[in-house]
Structures are given as C-alpha cells and as structure tokens.
Length: 357
Image 1 (cartoon, one colour):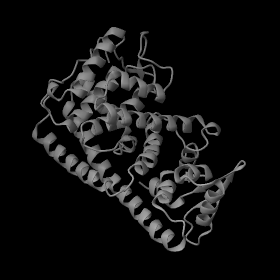
Image 2: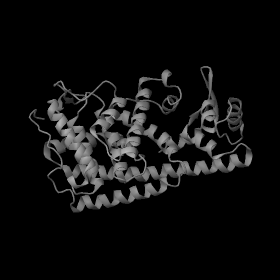
Image 3: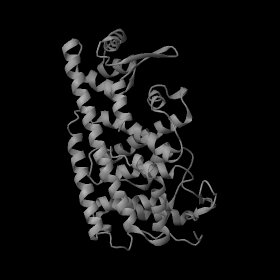
Image 4: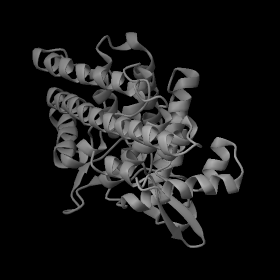
C-alpha cells in the first residue's frame, strides 16, 4: 500500500443502509436480542463476565499468535505469578475488559482517555505513538501491507474524531450495530499505540455494544469468529483501506455478530442448566447449600479455600469442609488437585462447557 494513504475521518461516505446490509442487520439484531434475553436467566451475570471473558481473552490473544491452554488460563486467575507470559496477557485482557465495562456503567460514555487506560492494561508502557516508523507487515513475506498515520497530531485528531463518533449518535444517523464495524475499522487503521491495538480494538467492539445498550454486559466475543476466519478479517480490513469496500466488511462483521450471538446463547443455556443441576443435587445432599456457594464455584472454575472464606464470609476450616465435601461427593461437583503446597478445586463440568463453546 502506498505510504501516502490517508485515514479519512468518520463518518464514511458510503451507503451503509442498502438492502444487503439491512437484511444482515435484521438477522444480527434478532440474534443479539435473543442473547440479551437468555443472559437475564442467569441470576448473577458476574458469572458470565468472569468465565466467558477469560475464554475471549484467550481467543483474542490467539489472533495475535499468543497461545495458552485452558487449564493454564484458569490457573492464572488464582496464581498469577507462576504462569506463562501468554496466560498473564490473557488475564490482563480480561482485567482491561472489566475496567472498560465499569467505566461505561459509571460514566455512560467512552473517551479516548478511557481507551488509553484499557490499552495500558492490555499492553503496558506502549502509549500513543509519537515516533514515526510503525508499519504493518505480512508476517510471512515481511512485505509492508499498511502504513498507519505517522504524525502524532494527526493520530490524536483522528482519535478525537473517533471519540465523537462513538459517543454522539447524531454524528452519523445510522443503526448502532452498523457503527460497530466502522468503529473497529477506524481504530485498527489509526493503529494509535505502539502495541496492543488489535486486542484493544476487540475489547472496544464489546464495550461499544454495551455503550449502545445492545447488550447489558460484555459477553458477545467476536475473537473466536475472527480466529476461524482470520484471513478474511485481515483481507477485508485492508480492502476498505485500498478499495473502499465498506459493504463487504460490514456484512462480514454483522454475520459474525449473528453467529457469535447464537453460539453464546448455547453456552449461556448450558451454564444455566449445569447451575440448576448443581443447585438441586447440592441442596438435596448437603446442609451447607446456599446461592452464594453456587455462585462462587461457577464464578471461579478453579477455586480455593480463600475464595469461599471471602465470598461466603466463613472461617477457613468451614471453607475446607465445604469444598472437600463437594469433591468427595459421588456427583463429583469439584475435582481436588494439589499444585505446589496449595489445594485447588476444579469445576470440570463448567470448564467442559466453556471449552466446547
């Protein structure tokens, strides 16, 4: 791509409400609405944020070829210091997502300063670019495929324009779900930071849906869709830059929303069904049953005595008795393992649901 490529401020000058896009929009909106309804059936939505967000973190990192295993991913949630760099980066991604969600709940807007805070967790010490020289290369051929804006003032001006586009509905009178791929394209094309742009941009997708009240919590994670269609993802982004092919890009992202929403509905229902099964069986077999107990062993697929102490406000010996009883039960609610000097209790049935999404 020519180095004189110029990133055009938003909104794009293109008809993004043609028949094809509106048809795809209808299907994506319907699936998203169904997902929103299913989420409300889970009594404590934090369970979904704490569990599914880690899977999204794993997938989003994998887009960048940062790979970790499911077991290591969940172990890192309780023993952050003794895990691989890939697992730590996945945890950072999940933390950044939760920060963004809390900002939107508190302020109702998402500013560039907020995005900087999110990116600082995703990739610390890689601020908005001031030094020219950043290019995006084909990892196999090392051919330069895209040169983002190099001038710091231009980058800041484009980010200011993006901030208005995100927060001011009147700036572009178009359905919010169509805006989401526009926001993602623009952020990735500005490529404002020295590192972490892809991961931050994928967090931005989810936060934008919550910001626009299309979802109540950030659980529509497109990274698995992107991994399955990685070549198309990068090709279509590039074709918007080189050939102004907005329609193809928006259609592809709307299809991703539709398919991912349907997949997530299955996961949410499977989690709910498993929780209901645990509730019935634990209530029937153990006098210590409580809603808080169920919430804890579903929020933390890997749990330990400390979690029960804190979240149920009980003594350590009581927490030990509860977890050991659940591990010893013939239903195998939890599996007890020893890592180093500590005992951990794994909700393997929940992990299986999350792995099979």
